[in-house]
Length: 331
Image (cartoon, rainbow, N blue to C red):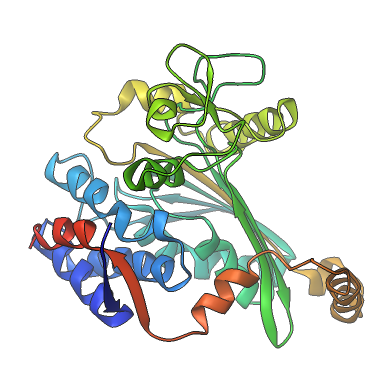
């Protein structure tokens, strides 16, 4: 499949113009464009331009409010609730995360629950934002069922990603962002588009048989990573992002969604912790020594380092031509 070379600035302008054309106001279009451009900048192609058709489908169907204006309620000094106004998660993040930072800086820990948002991106932008404010960040969200619980052949969990970011003074934070499925569904979809086989253990076909064919897995189910261990963490994500936020579980998201190709409405749980208050005064030095000891082991790299390396490179990205044509067709 042929690719085209485009700049990050061109990507941001393109998607901003697309979302303005498709029914977003400037605030919502800019927030979404920032999220997509960050994904492409860091080499996370499965969560960048690849997601635009789904975003557009949700706007065209009327499912998502392109003029969303989130509201924030402070339940206690450390419990914040954001009503996303039926909009994309990116807008809710830009509105509510600074308030979460303030609460955690003052109190040592704070929790943000977001309801009624459409999350279709990676999770690392929100946790890394917290780490850049010298806080520890944790986030998780559920999705429509596509993952079979351990021992089953029927989808019940979403891919249910989790992300954690740890601050490092003067250096890039340590950040991981991973599906609790063996592989994120977007990566499986890209493998199907590009005709790449998948490793053993990613999923089952529609007959419940193990398969390496991404097209067949998309007809069947994904599997949790690590068997029952990943399945338990996926269950935890359901409870945090639905049970604690009061929003929908994955199976309920499926029941309520119009299946337009975009994300379902759901909740997100985000927590910020302030090590300046929680830990000892020498916490930064202590953790720096830990990371140095870890990376001295041959073959080890810190989570997030590959993305940060991509980010520090040039301003050009290689994008699938067919995808670019599709995105431009929305103008």
